[in-house]
Image (cartoon, rainbow, N blue to C red; front, top):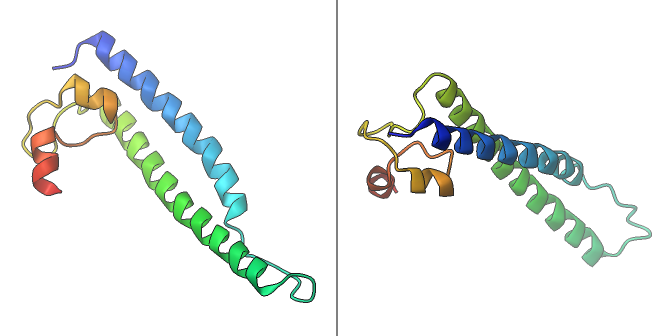
Length: 115
């Protein structure tokens, strides 16, 4: 069971990560826009490179969006006093695990079992 100080530290961590992700998403959104190249002035290798960079930005955008969603869900669980409990077995999730992955939904045993 988490005490109030631990919950406060984890909430601060979650909010800090959410702010970082929102800033990252802004940059990734711009980088994942469709590639428009003038084929007369840009060579084939440059076009391929631009398309690859766009695809990597889109993958990063999806990953960051998913991570932000997990963070927001953790903050919601925190607000409803459901935070810190494994969604599989119902046992508490250790503070050390939550410090590493504050959005964790499962205790280490269930996370390993479901992996």
